[in-house]
Amino acid sequence: MKPKLSSGDLTPIATRAITEVLAVQLKRVAEPVAPGDERLKEATGHHLHATVTLTGERIVGAVLFQVPVEFATKVAEQLLGSDAETDDSKDVTGELGNMISGLVKGELSSAGYHGTLGTPTVTLGSRISLHAPADSELCTTEWSCEGHLLSLQIQLSHPHPAA
Amino acid sequence: MIPKILTVDDSKTIRIILARLFRPFACELHEAGNGEEALAVAGREKPNLIILDYNMPVMDGVTMLRLLREDEDLKKTPVIMLTADSSSEIISTVARLGVRDYITKPFNQDQLLAKASRLIILERRREGKTE
Image (cartoon, rainbow over all chains, first blue to last red; front, side):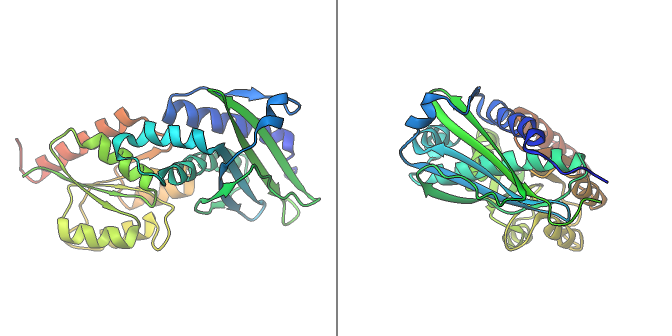
């Protein structure tokens, strides 16, 4: 019997995924923000949310990466330079979400939880949270990167009893 | 003849990053947003190298690769996979389809450039076009 994954199992996976993507692709460092941190109450304003679904025999869920629009704009300018256009921050956020989800999927696969990734869906709005049904696990990690608050959530449920 | 590179990714971000990476060098760049578009561009342009994503709408990278290998004119085109998906099943599938290199996102741009350059040089040697 393979034990069910807990949110405690997911936190180090989320941490490795976001820190690697920021370091390798953006050459940036993010510091973890504790759940009760006062800065989280001030995290208002428009955010871009990249959501990627993960579907497998033993796990079903999603990865949500959300960033303030100002951060996404800064990153788009960094990655795309003079080729950046007004709407490119959405595509950049989607691609970062895709990279993070790929790393999460890789770690889950190594642990025996295989799945297929969807293509990223990007939306704009205030900060959101993934819906977590009672029998699912929700891991939320918050990060500070150059004064911007970033959030990464992984929500997983086990559709069938683990074999 | 300068080498032609076809980049295939549904993310405009990745296509622009690759265009910016290769732009300073003497090469001709072409883009496609999915496997179906890529087959059309490849048939027309006969690229010397394809940099291919896996997870794309319309037609994914593995399906495109299978069809590429069935095309008499294009079957020997070197392909580098550049994808966020690093699962062993996909790696072994594309290896059987003759993918020359597999790079996972996030990626080091210098490393990709070095691998692409090496493959283009080898391809031109194979064709007998040394410069």
